[in-house]
Amino acid sequence: MSVTLISPLPEYMERASRLYLESFPPEERRPWEQIASPCDGAGPQLRMIADSAGEFAGLITTWRFPAFVYVEHFAIEPSRRGTGIGGEAISLLISRERLPVVLEVERPDAQIPTTERRIRFYARYGFKILPFNYIQPPYAPGLPEVPLMLMSTAPAPDPAEISRTLHREVYGAGRFN
Image (cartoon, rainbow, N blue to C red; front, side):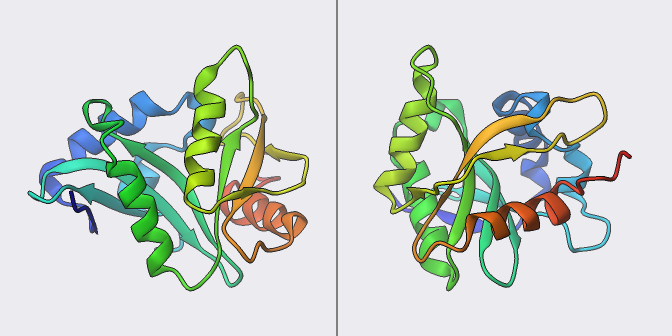
């Protein structure tokens, strides 16, 4: 199996939107329009994950900063999960980047097995949990903060600086005050 990360294709935008909305709860997603059409070019970069036949298999959104690349969202079509496509896609992303790759994950919860499974998945590709008490700010008024953990490939940037950058650039902390 071989995957590619491609620019968004119009014929796959509806599937990508549906996958995004189904994969992330409201408190962990921004409005789809900000992903599909960032207004200033400084927002998230959407890439689609295509299988060896060029068919849509998932999506990944990233932000590029001077010290690291941040993966904001990563989702694989439900029918494709467990096939290796996700691992190939994250490996491809890491291999293309010269900077450490950073992402957020839910804290382990024995009542929710997917939290621990997700952490193990990223650990297989070189991500390590950063020792930092991280809170994701709300994406919009009325949504809650989300206690998460940061994971990074090596060499890991300073977790406090990662947090400040994400809060300022990705979440626009303070924009609702």
